[in-house]
Image (cartoon, rainbow, N blue to C red; front, side, top):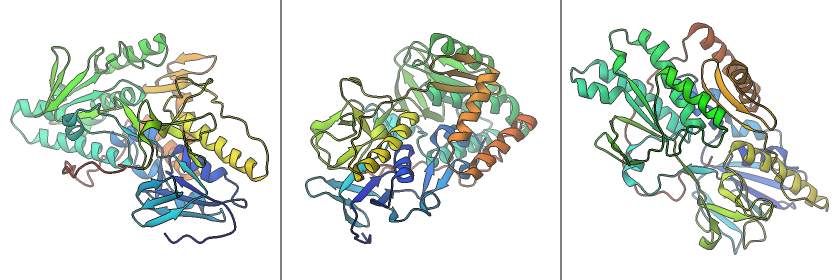
Length: 435
């Protein structure tokens, strides 16, 4: 790999997601040479992927060029590449554009979908973990309505306009609400000659309630709001198979649909070269409180790919964007302190709360001391997400889109730029995506 060698320690960061990007932004590059590797040339704000998939936002409003983030930092290099393998013994990263040595390695490769070993679901469902996934889902949704309009087969029309979402965490709840608002407010104007009463949105959750990690009150509010929007909710239900457009579950319920959306589970992802004995729950690399990978001296893992196991966090930390961002900032500051021979403290997570939106004027927010729902929670949700977006332009574009959509009930352009095509199976990649 064509990276100049200089008289500074080289820090290699794999992944420009929430954790990796924070390290790159905060690291003192007068003390280190920084090399950031990612398979995309942009950072994706994943919490708003559901709005891209439901045609509420355009993809460029939640993506930001990596090179633009790094352009003013000296001794900093970015390379567009797939990381294939890590050789820990020789401190070398192997990529599809060559090898790269490191003094310290930071793995921030995030998480990918966990289909729990079900090959049919993995092959036939639509995930929503990347910008490409969101665009595929949008094309699929809009394309299916066009197909439904042109068929006289009532059963096929129902399959094309039925949507099954597996997983009632924040992603599943937010997407279900967005699809319901499409059905109720947007699509009747776009498809006046299509009977949208046949369209159904099913939300399936294995836990006893939606938004299970949140309080029972928040869960009840979300449940009630979704039901009012027309979403059919199935709790304590597991999807066991999806083949031939038929969704089967652990109970008597079955669903015929051309669109199964998977939001039910994630697992850590990282390149080959990690000792299998150091991989813990959720396919995450076990680390200490400082982010140091077990059994290594210069490999650190932050964000969803890492699993802290210590007295302070015996069960690890949740796979949340807030954890990844805080770890990224912490680790950059820790490296800066080490460069000045200062003592560093272990990472301590500041749990600022969780939130989810259900639709127009509806959200649930749980902060450290306050829990509230409704319109004010919706405003708080919007403000927090706007502030977390990377880039002033993105904040302005998203805000204007939200304001326009609120006033006009007209979210997005709903263009089918590229019709969805089911990808051909090509075998399991070494690393599916770096997020």
